[in-house]
Image (cartoon, rainbow, N blue to C red; front, side, top):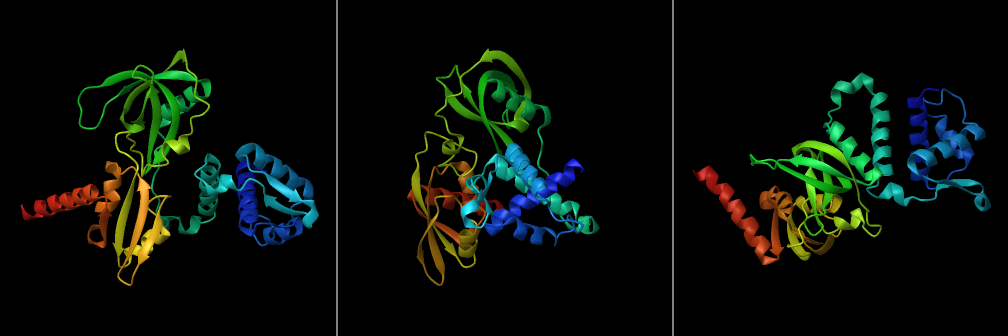
Length: 303
């Protein structure tokens, strides 16, 4: 069987068991035979077990069998499918690929956004992480003419709004951790200098209190209260601004939401983009900042 067809079967199997919670092999086969992939042929137990092994090797997903409960299969470590893990990202990407490959008849009616690969630089950065060596980068910030070359320690990468970012530590600047955008890296090369990645460093925790990619130790974590009017309250309920979001008071006209984070500059954009549909209630400095920026935008039209 071709590799791509096998991938489709792996994805289908994980997705089916994950959505159902628990299924016997007989129940899995009943669902399998309803797909075009099956071509009317059931999954043999030996094939099923090979698929389980391959899924574990490729994605780290454990499909376990509960022998005490009717030999039902379930995802043992479901947390990898519920978080922003690489397993979840890979499965989501491959799952969408599978859907699109079966939709060639309407491909011109499916509109997508491209995600930059960042090519060689992304490969080099990840290779440096695996080898535990520092990288030498030449970087130019937006709006700046001068280039800066530095040797840094690659900690982790993050994809945000169709851009790749590298989070690095500068060993020569009191160990300061900062963020490099891959589309502003002019050159990158691996060095032979080894470094120790701290075992207690947690990339998820690093951005826990951030809205997007910006991070600043000079901006403290604080409580932000936002009032959403009309239909905007439903958007915030369905797509929370931040994982810390809580719903507070609600009326027929508005709903107040609370988030706890570092209100860095990239947090201004989702607030400004809602225009007259939201109002920042707390903290006052942020409410004043958003008000001033909206006023400045309105004055541009007066001119």
